[in-house]
Image 1 (cartoon, rainbow, N blue to C red):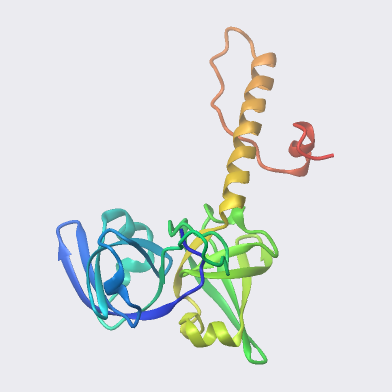
Image 2: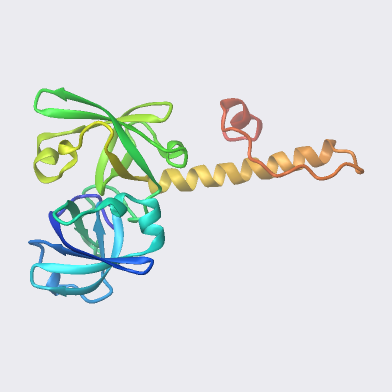
Length: 235
C-alpha cells in the first residue's frame, strides 16, 4: 500500500525489452539500496517490484498488463517519474490509501492558473467515473489529490505550489495521459451496491417472468436515486 505522497522524482536510465516484459532502470536520490529484493515501489502510481538495486538506482520489470493498461508503456530514456516507497505500519497516512493498481488512463483536458496554484480538468475513463466524489480522493500519476468538482466524466483538482514543486503534474500539457486510481472505499461501495441491486433486480424479474420464458441476463440497473430508494439504500 501507498499514500499518494510522492517522495521523489526519478529518471529513467535504461529500457530493455525482454519478450513481453520490459525492464526499466530508474535513477533516484532515495536510498533504494536499503530496499529488500521483491519490495514494492510506486512509479507514476503503478506498483512495481524491485528486482535489482544499488546505490542511486533500481530495476523493475513492466509486465504485459502494466504495458497495456498504464502510461508506463510510453516511457523513454530520460523520462521523469514520481516515486513512492511502500507504506510501513505506523507510518503517517498523509494522503489516502493507495494500492498502486491503476484503474484506467485519463487525459488532461484543461489547465487554469489560480494565483500560484494550478487547476487541472481531467477526463476519466468509464471504469473510474463511479469512484469520483466531490471532496473525495483520487490518485493522478501516483499523487493523492482532492476532487473539487465532477461533471460527467471530467473532474477537477487543484495543484498547490508545493505539489507543483515536488511533482511533474504542472508540466503536463492539455492532452497528456495520466494514470488514475479511484478511492479504495468508493470502489468497494460501488461494487457492493451494484451487486446488491443486481441480486434484487434478479429476484424481481423471477417473480414476474413466465415459467416458460428463458432467464433474463443479469445486469445491475443504473444507480439512480429511485433505484436506491426502491431497494432500501436511501429514503
